[in-house]
Structure formats: C-alpha cells, structure tokens
Length: 291
Image (cartoon, rainbow, N blue to C red):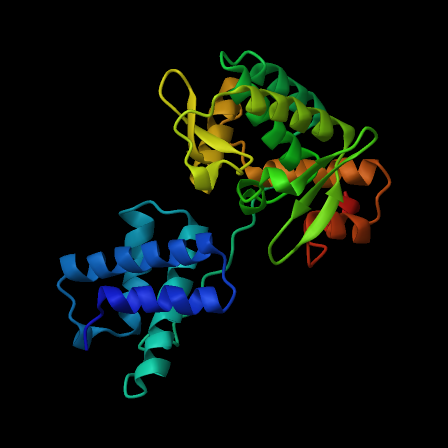
C-alpha cells in the first residue's frame, strides 16, 4: 500500500465532516505532505514504517527544520490521525504510530501587552499612507484587543453581520461559537470609520463573491483591495504593526488576552467573558484572576 494524493484529500474531507475548521484541515494536509517528502528523501518505504520513524521525524523537525515545539506536536497529531484513519478505512492495515506519545503543549508566556502599548499601536496605524488600510487595521485590532475575536471569526465577517444603531453596534459571529455581540464604543467607532472608508473606495479588482467580505488584503503600492483577508494575511499585518512599535511578537493571542483583561476591569464575570468570546473553558481567564 502506498499513500496517494487522493488519500490526503479524502482525509481532509473526513476532518471537515467531523467539524474541523478549514485552517486545521489545511495545516494537517501540509504536515502530511512534509512527512511524505521526508520519507521520500530518506528513502523509507511503506513497509519500513514503524514507531521509531515518527520519533526520528520529530528530531528532524527540531534540529534540521528548527520547528517550534507546538508545530512538532501538531505534526505528530496530524500523522497519527491520518494513519489511524487509513487503518480504519482499509481494515487490513495497522497504523505503526498509535503507540507514539503526543508531545506536551508548550504554553506561551503571559501577555504583558498593556493599554499604553495599545494606544501606541493605534497611533502608529494612523500614520499609514492609505486611510482605508489604516481604518481596516484599526478595526481589526479593536476586534482582537477589546472583543477577543478569533482570527477565523474576523476573516469570516461580512458586512451583513454588522448592524450600527445610534446608541450601539452589534456584529454577528457565525460558526461553532455563533453569537451576537454588542461591541464596545471604541470598536464601534473603528468599525464605522472603516465602513465609511470602505464604501467610499472603488474596490478595484474585487470579485462579485468577495464584495460582501468585511476585511480585504491589499495589493501593490497603490494598496488596492483585491481579495478577502486570510489568516496568514492577518498574522503578517500584526507582525508588521508590531515591528513598528518594537514588539515583533505581537499576535492574535496577546491581543485576545488584552481583551480578557479589559473585560475583567469592566467588572464582567468569567461566565460573561466566556460567552462574549465564545470560550468553552476558563483557561486564561482563571490565570488572570489568580494574578
């Protein structure tokens, strides 16, 4: 038996049917493709696969590829699940990796992102040459740092999910943690400014299917919006903005933790914060409460 491209596609379809997010299935597919390339270069045949193969692969990722421990952990999970899927599908095939332990997750250090740094970040964004990009980035930062939205929730937002009233603004979050949020005043202001700039733009190059998307990526020196913002695009935007304020490690999780801190300062209960952010467990909320 040999692994075919169709096997990975059917595995991805299997994961989607199980409710996995598109980003997760894409990550698993990349992990599997990298593992198959490793087997090819190492000239390891299907018949030679055993538990030590995956153990040596972990060492390869760590030493040769300098992969982050959590990326290695995800790769192990991807490979184990894929081979278990094959064994359940083929019946006559036994996965060689079921007894390989999954590495422990490495927790990120607590965020030290404070209100003053957020203000500095927002001021730096206002120096952007393109008003539309500045308003877009400000709106995204607010959705992360005040509302605690996840990256996939932000890039999935459409203007039909946005409702602006004279006294309050709501956004509808779709997906596994669907909810309707009444956003904070700062977020509402940023969204309305972005919406006004968005309506005023010509939206050159935007396809019909994309016009309802709230957030776009930009292309070229003229900063023309040309397609929906991706997770990678959002991550890169934060990296660029972080560099501007000498915080190269700025990411979605740091900003979402700031949202928890803000909601706690406002007197929100842990249960209210979990409902607002779509969380299933206390996790970081409990850690911040213990500080």
